[in-house]
Length: 191
Image (tube, rainbow, N blue to C red; front, side, top):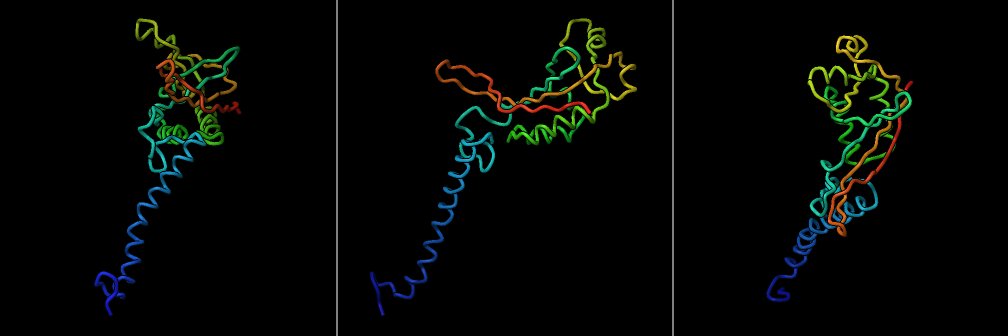
């Protein structure tokens, strides 16, 4: 028996599921995009994660986020350079990338605790670095093994705590400038 437009009725009924399936992939893609945009706008998750929808819509990429460590030693605070602290610790580099992607309090505090308490002695190697360079350089404070402190000409620091801050770039359209915005801060105390 012939149906509409000369197509047998049996063929039309079997083609209907295939037509619905052809809309399933675009519908799922739209759901994933809306979910990712909702999660990244309501949390600190980088727009480059969960599918990457919206990743080119701003300056907030994982590379535009950084961790600023501040060492609480003696009477004051010493801001440090993150890369110099973890250059020989690939486990901390991976953990830091995860924290920069989605800053959360517990992983950030765990990262600070690992860096502060598993690193040996904190030492100020600035005088030794100036003697090597022959010119003024920034503060060079880093964790060292106990036997390395004297060999390198560094002096141990009385470290009480370490504070880690996660920052990102933000574009201010009114002033047409990039600025830094602190996303999260966590501290670790010396055991």
